Image (cartoon, rainbow, N blue to C red):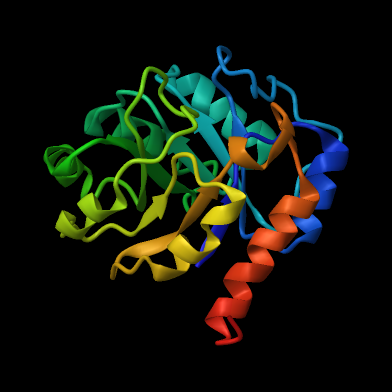
Length: 215
């Protein structure tokens, strides 16, 4: 199971989170977010985990330029991006990084929202299921994960939306053939953009111990 920690921007905090052995680290490029990383890279970027850039209805050229500047491994679209838009960005990225992966975030409330995933088959590499709310993401609340038992698509997905340090047991009990990992953010913060290393380590340890049959 992949563990993605999103909303990073401080160089020292990035180093400490990377040392925990997480799989993916997210950087938010939506200027209205209080976790906006900025247009220029921090003094340190991770080298042992995958870099994910999070965008909300950005201009395609801007996405490509930031992907180049930050040397992104994944582009995550968290707005109303259409399949045509995503295909355009992917085509523009072919020379720069033909292996870049694309994640499309989907806001979920009920099983009807899952129908919106179908057009993205063959266009994206992964989905991220987040809680439907006022903001494109970062609403800090969970949706009913049981809804995802009605997801029968072929794209793997990350589970997001208000996952907290005391949710390790629920994560371990969640099963779906396309479940690829979790996305952690606001519930693991000391302040916006600064992650609590102790909380992250305890959570990750609980996940690993369960998988080894020790919990």
